[in-house]
Image (cartoon, rainbow, N blue to C red; front, top):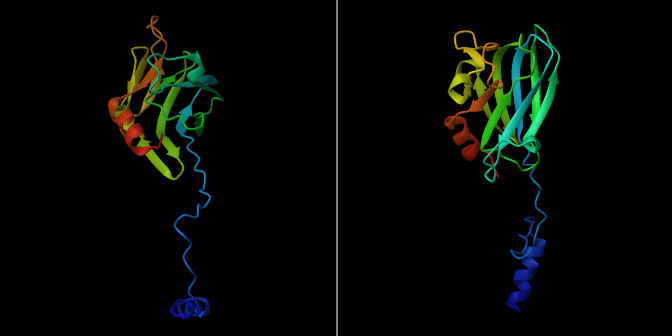
Length: 173
């Protein structure tokens, strides 16, 4: 009888009953896609690539490349690189195109996954990215040019350890 009266009270109340702990609710699927946005001024038509390494990789592979064409302009543009779903790179490499007269002014690099964002401003670009010998990077005006006298290296920019640490700590695998 006591059980019945407790049951009756709960049915008559306006507070909803809690679901049993054993009931499984469908979980919302979280998109783990990572986007990299490179905001800059790209003076000449060109092609840019982002190569990446994962925990399984030790060398850059063509299959780990995202390639984008850029139309030259004196105005700021955004190049969007979308990494394959659920890939969080351990290292990132920018390969500049074949236009030896290219001049790029770095404005910002943004990494986004869901609602998490990492912003790398023009003044911090050099802290997170290291140009190779084929690139001349002017830290005072955030300008990238290609050193045409350096014939032995393709113009590339490599992620530094602080960015690699951020990738590991900020984004979900």
